[in-house]
Image 1: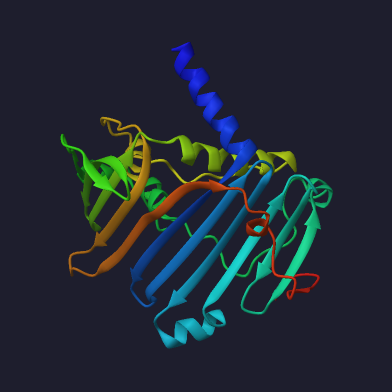
Image 2: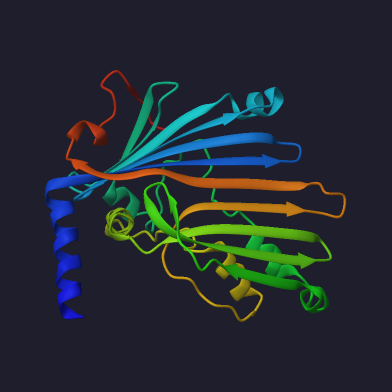
Length: 276
């Protein structure tokens, strides 16, 4: 047991000292009145440095215009200079604040990007479970299947978990693919968490498993499956077969040689007080 811990610790130190990890993710959402929305996110993590850039594409013209067009926005956390940068790649603008400024604001960044943070769970699924009456919860039916065989997804050996929740509101179908090969994932998460904590903030992590989070909130017993999600789908359908669909998938996660430019914004970007 001690030997395994030492090996894991050495791997983390090696990554943080000499290289960086790059993560690419894509999320697709199809929702009533909104239409299809695709968000592509790239994360870069190295020792004391973290950058995240997301682009969002909306297929419906009116929704896209209401948002001000498709967006490509990002942020950079630099623990060495103790600064936080947010930028708009479309408008070629950026704004910057120091960690001291954030500390003086009780650990809450004062600069916001114009793209709201979207989570893979659809934002309020867990809340809907919590708001159900006792009578509705009693009428809900739960079914969970864990595959015995392993699959290969994005270069990882994964186990598929299927969870169905049927209630008066309709059917929720959740499919998750989890891997226990989590070293790179843990490194990226730790870099971001450490930087956020260094300015007094608190990082709200995405649930490791949305199905397990929902089952826990509904006080249901279930078999937990360890690991990190590499793919996730959720469908919600009502009695009219109308509903919501979300698909999130890891495109890649790789350890590569450190590249300083991955944590910098283009010199052509104009500095502003805050993004519009």
